[in-house]
Amino acid sequence: MKTRAKTRARQDEILKLLKQAGRAMVEDLAERLDTTPQTIRKDLTALAEDNQIIRFHGGATLAAGTEYAGFDVRKEIMRDEKEAIGATIAAQIPNHATVILNGGTTTMAVARHLVHHVGLSVLVDSVNVANVLRSFPGVQVVVPAGSVRGADGAILGSVAVDFIRRFRADIAVVGAAAMGRDGDLVDYDLEESAVSAAIMASARTVILALDSSKFGSFAPVSFGALHEVTFLVTDAQFDPAMKALAADSGVGFLAAG
Image (tube, rainbow, N blue to C red; front, side, top):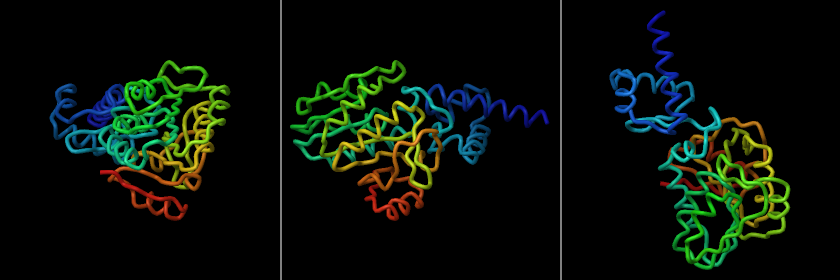
């Protein structure tokens, strides 16, 4: 019984560390928790089987949907996968287009890969994403009016929604906190969901940027459904059921990396 309690306490500490940092390596966790790498690997396997974390070679990241982590933590969750998704989506965006990006860590990765585009007009609902784009010579950045959320720089509120609804973009790129196995697109915040729904309604082509850890996860507020988007772009670790759902929904599917 003592051993089980000790194991549970160690796994709780691992989760706490991942919620603070987003990702961690086996060797660092072993040193931090004064145990062996083999023990940490067993703990990570147990946590992964419980869908609380995602394993990668040499470490783990916090699974999407276990708890709404802060922006800096979310940037580290599936970081390499998000970067690959960002590069893949940016390659689908032509020069001289009008684009809308919602605020998020995956759409921020898309923004970073627009550095060599020219003639883009990009509307973003995040001061963090706008800050990434503002120095790119070929990009004109537009931000809506509204309230800026201190935690992550998202621009929210009815004024922002009304502003976005006035646009008719060539392409919208949206992220989500999670996508259910029924294709429901969900988030944690009601105001943020309203902004994302307005973005989807304002573009001819809608690209959903969703790393594979978010498939089948949960968040409480729905803002759309998979069949409303044009393309789903995810990473190479995708669940085959994700691709099948896209096909059933009449949605294009791209796996990055």
